Length: 338
Image 1 (cartoon, rainbow, N blue to C red):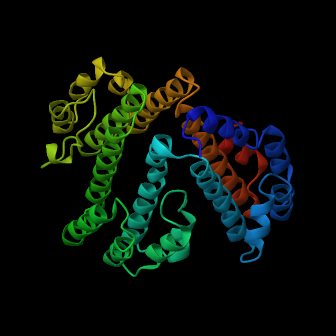
Image 2: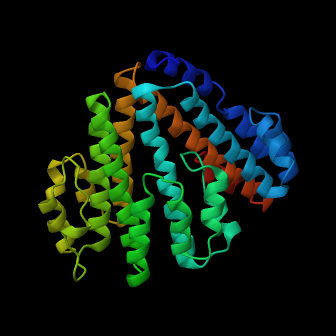
């Protein structure tokens, strides 16, 4: 199997040509009801996935299953024509879906949600296969979920078990999620160390760690007992000292350490939502630079995965809109067309 990104990226560009375009979204918005939307989807590149999902499900669950199948088939296909260091680097970003799925399960268990509700929030595109995720989601509680994950030997399994144990004694969901973030970045930085990679990729991941630390500081700032124990090492622009100053108080002045970083606009944000938007913009721009800088490296794959995620989110939104009879104008606004 070829191990160079020249071949891999050529295949990924072929996958990109199958992404749904404006014509499909216009047809979907014009669909008179859920059945018409499903018909449009079955005549798109999702045809095979709809047919397979219809054998087991119906209604909204069928569409969700088709969308999930398509996403997983796409990501596993990319791994299928990759090997060596490129495959290891791509796996870093597929591992992120496992991280997000474990967080979604933890949040749902914390809130006492039903298993079917949990499954709707999952996107099985990483190492954890759908059947394994179903088993973890169906566990009666978080310790049971940790036990189900432990038998898979997943790289986040031991960290999840420790985080759940801490959660069981303290009930701190935020601490559990932060422990998973810390474990995830520790794993991927180890993978980077073991494989050749562009410097810009490492820079991008360091920015992501900085972003996590800024989000954490903004959530806990001014609270009694907030400390550097929440800090995730490995970033580049936000030091532990910066983190401690950010989280120590809720004043505008406490944000000034960010004014000389890539996240300078966060210091000017008036609200948490504005700060989040500024953080997200920095990460998106970094990913775009990674994509544009070298057409023969991993940026092309990452850009495609991001586009595929957006497509998945839009299809899920459209499906629910048509299923529940949401007016077209509202759907357009939620899709970003309004």
